[in-house]
Amino acid sequence: MKRLLWVGVGVGLTVLVIKRGPKLVERYVPADAAAAIGTVTKVTRTARGVWGEFSAGLAERERELRTALVGDADLAGVKARGRDAWDDLRGARRPAADRRGRVPSEWAEGPLEDPDDDDGYAFF
Image (cartoon, rainbow, N blue to C red):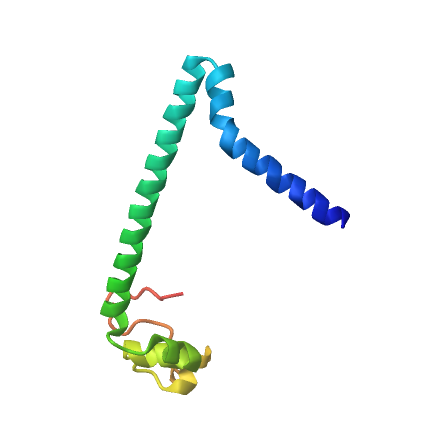
């Protein structure tokens, strides 16, 4: 019951401040300070509007890029299948066994020098 009493007191004070607050500010705060508060409020609202427009544009561009990257694929299904599904969408040419981070055996057996290198410099 004590908690319910204090919740009621908090709600009552909040309503009082919302209803009477602007009148008290108008009466006791100097005009220049009130004008500054009004300016800060306008700047804050403008900044929120700009941020909202920026976020909307960013989301739209992200949708465009995703569509260009994967087309009309079911993204939820792709995410559920994992990394191999993303590689399939991108048109990966490597076999699935090589996608696991292992070096293909033909790389380890080959020469370490570039056969097209006319100057004779080694890669490593």
